[in-house]
Length: 462
Image (cartoon, rainbow, N blue to C red):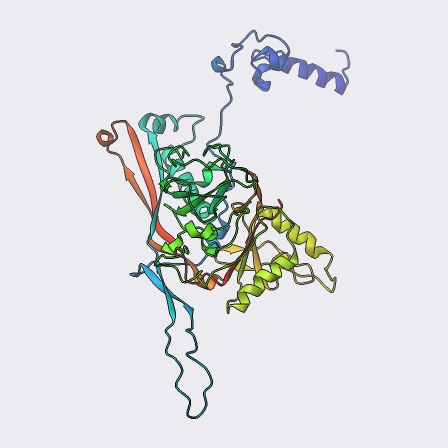
């Protein structure tokens, strides 16, 4: 027998392996000419008929941002048996003053008390699966228990909805002059909710309305139900679409916009923003000459500008001047990195130690205890949230960068009337279909007991 080298022996062994009855396709799982370079003579050339059709695992990975940082950071409490409260906004005139020995007594004046109405809101999330889907999902390549999967996803979506509602903007866009209310003129229809009450503020005469108050209705959020058209005019800034009241949770933008500021060059914003039934328009029962206990808003009439430390310091100063103490700064990731660049030149390398600050169920990004503080600013935790409200640009239907909110969370809470509950229905006759339906619902409201100890910086560049 001739001598065979190791290389030749291995080469012959490999040839035998590739020429066995199973063929190379058994190892490569190739099934068509596209994968092998030649037509497959053993199996069908279509994936559907081949025994090596791809089989998927049951794990479903999320490709969505499901972070709910602001919702997790805000304190939560039981709603209680009260449906409102009172806010004292004025000490009274000349009720306290120095007086001489025999002078007349000071005039009697009473405090100004604003009544606040706050009822819980209901937020629901629906899910369902047909009986066929529930069966086939258990087969090879299926996702497993499809109803449990949808239940898990619905829970994530439900909390995400609550977080997004907390950031819904009060102003939804400057409408193009004379063009009517259309998707193209409103910044983002997904920022409206069915049941929201809307109004159009006249740019030509700020504080007056274009058409009647209307509510979003129907199965789809549509602007056709508003029933008002911006007036034709020559103004450079067109009419403004505003939310008067919400079907869902009150947003932080509603709370800080109680002040009669000018948004996007259109004044009279707060005239129509009736958060907690507080209306600033003159002559109404809720008016006290401008609602003295209003939040601080730093805007720029819809023109973008960069975030500065002066803007941030002013917001903190306004809150402290009114007796509050900021405990949380909320912003989008765009402003977070701008703040980082602002502070990086001030860093002092006297020893570094990374640390994080906990707020509610969340933690800040890691920061240092030296000059550059990513986790806090002036000792106040910074919480970036992907859902943070965007500023509204002066041009129709466009947005700016995210707003910055400086908040005293001692006076903010999510009041829970009924914790999130899951209800399942398997009545095929009631559904008139072979489906299993599920629903998650929460009854709650975002409440602010004081408005003056919060601040917003808006009209910032992205």
